[in-house]
Image (cartoon, rainbow, N blue to C red):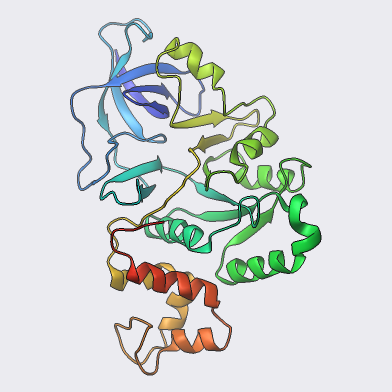
Length: 314
């Protein structure tokens, strides 16, 4: 028995698969060492990957007799990061996603713009469309209305859609639900921004902290999921990732970084010199745009920080 399926849960050495768009989960394990060509990631199989699998007989795979993943198909796109502050290793967060929704909060916890900008750059590098979800607005709108507008000015000006939400009050959840539609989408963000609460607000039947469906299939084995896909009642497949505490760029040369800031890429076409690092060269259109306020100083400072990074990624 053999077939093709999508990875919907990664629980260490054990996986759950489903033949999307059907939602019929079955367990699987890896055969030997599978490595993707050209990949430096520590995890050869990620949630969202399309894989080929086989089983010993015609019976449906069970936790006692799981299917075996034999190969991973070429990825359409993916989101990858350096896994820890000092690590040179990389980890794929999700693969083959239609869009990434990056959850942030201006306060509680206080936002770190360089952290967000690293995620945005990575999504640009690997062709993942992005929407920014500004969560918990009910907690700080009264005293931070100007900061909310400044944030939207910066990122809408860079070409990103910003959706204001509150998982607690329900504000913006319908808008977010429509934006996700019935696609495969990644929800990710820094620890504490309310990602799990947003998933539950999108579909109250889901509980990303418990994972009861997956636990039943794995019969208690490796039930602490690192990465998992959830199916909403409306048919969307939402990939949930753990709260991120660091996000380092992977396989990106310094001279390439500016290409993945959309607003800087547009302005750089008018630079006097090519290539231009946008740091010291005369006639730099990017620096001119920053001075004139057409490119935000915050985004430009994030860019300068990425140029200076070596082994530290937080």
